[in-house]
Amino acid sequence: QVQLVESGGGLVQAGGSLRLSCAASGRFRSINVMGWYRQAPGNSRELVATITSGGSTNYEDSVKGRFTISRDNAKNTVYLQMNSLKPEDTAVYSCNADITNWFYSTRYYWGQGTQVAVSS
View (tube, one colour):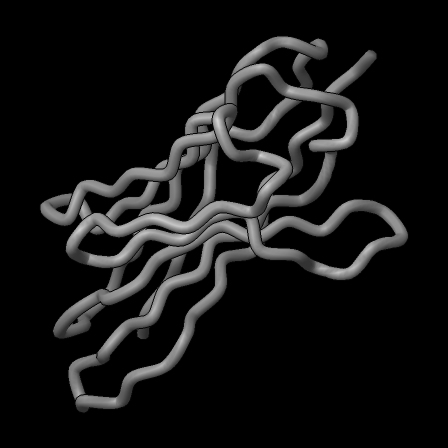
């Protein structure tokens, strides 16, 4: 069993900051890429940012310069520091990770999501 659990979401005023965390638990052999996605009301889920085990990152254009993705491999945790938040950042943010489990099966796992709401 592999589980991803997000935390850190909440309500914040425009211009404020939030820090999301996603921790992987269970028995697995390795984690490659980890990332954050979001889904706003009425929209499809979109990529926000990804980070490889080596630290290479990619960002959706609208969050570049405002969001920073990072990870702590010792804690099997990925973070998303969100600064200068805008109302359009309001969405459910979900963690994603490419994980090789104990039986050498590699696939993407998803967390349940954490709500981020930015008021104007």
